[in-house]
Amino acid sequence: MAVARNEAGRDVRGQLRALIGATAFAEHACARLVRDVEAEGYRLTKDMKGTVVSVYGGGEAYAVEFLGLEAGMAVVTIGAADLAGNAN
Image (cartoon, rainbow, N blue to C red; front, side, top):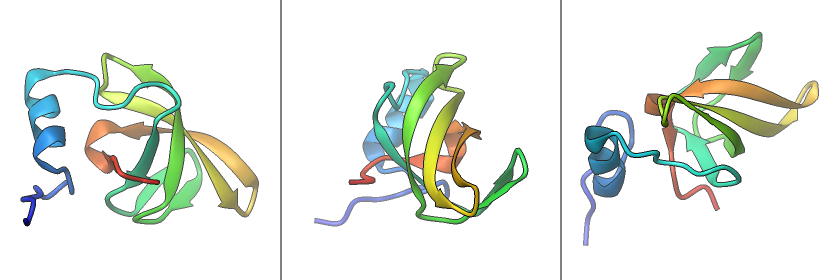
């Protein structure tokens, strides 16, 4: 069964969460980037996986820890539209 995804890469559940304003990711949840992102001096690439370490504005943005960067690891603030679930 195919699952429709929007332009942000969200599946139906993620789209509904965005519409009703529910937090899509809890702290310690795995997440992945749906597009390339430049944030806080880091170049992060689509499909990079990270761990949510903090939730801002009820899910409008997240502090996400990424490993495997030139600097080793970094915690970067990422907007909700740039994240999707199923990063395992």
